[in-house]
Image 1 (spheres, rainbow, N blue to C red):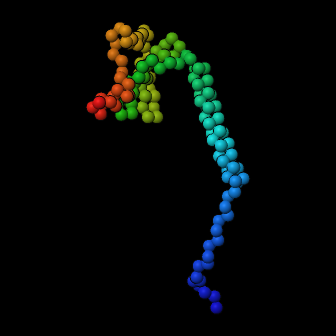
Image 2: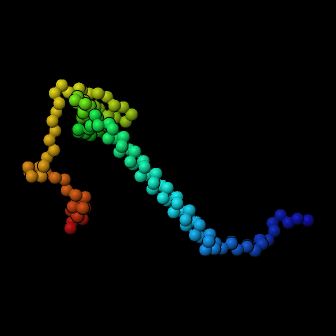
Image 3: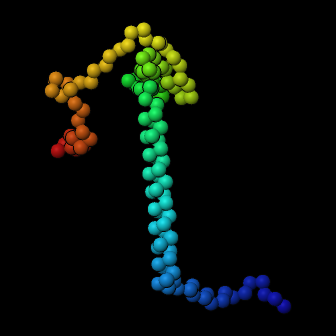
Length: 127
């Protein structure tokens, strides 16, 4: 007669990984990490290469209008377009007849500069 519930048998010890096995696992892990970093570097280089090729398109300004909506001023060649951008949708709001010139404020001209994150954090902590 067979027993449906037999007493557990003694577990056998797992084979120990020798120095050769540990070295091969380490080398395999390093190879995988090198491949991941190499692919990330290649992807970043290809993305910046494609951005340089599209030099005729430039975002001049952007302003949030709501939680997910914003107005974007885009320069395409010599023309400027005001676009409305929402999730899954881009609409041309206006084509400017006369291009708008935007000046970036300089610190020497009395323009306000944005505080660094470290300064904001120190201020919020009261230091």
